[in-house]
Length: 156
Image 1 (cartoon, rainbow, N blue to C red):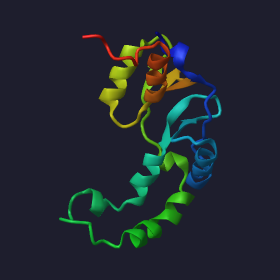
Image 2: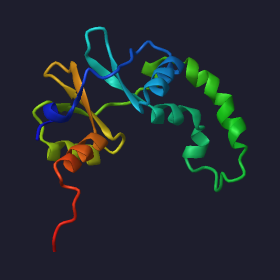
Image 3: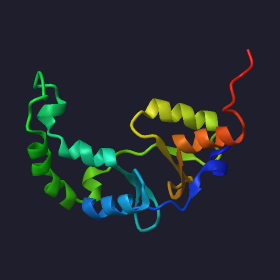
Image 4: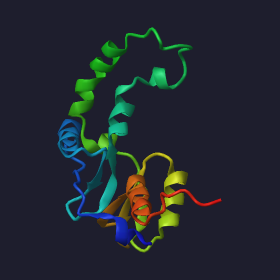
């Protein structure tokens, strides 16, 4: 099965100059966890996700392991202090590198790429010029396998 058969066509996107807060609102309203970031011609520039936001809200000294324990850190205060600044950032400041795949890639190839990429559970389907054609999630692949009746236990 190929990416073109399971991808979601015409996914909701965001622009690099959009504000993080505006992109997050789109994500909340549409129940999305990621938005492809595209330019005016539909060329993929990056991927914006809820993870992108959290990554910018959590202070570096917490993530770096400099503290032995963060159990007693004033979490809400720390997170609250960074939240407004992050919401005002441009999406291009918070986007990450996307996993790009071709529309003729197989399901197995996409699954392997997602596992190896390790940062998202989404792959962006692009043409040869990196224009966005669609998006494939790990969940989409699992749904397709279930639809094919592959969720039944094997006899053994």
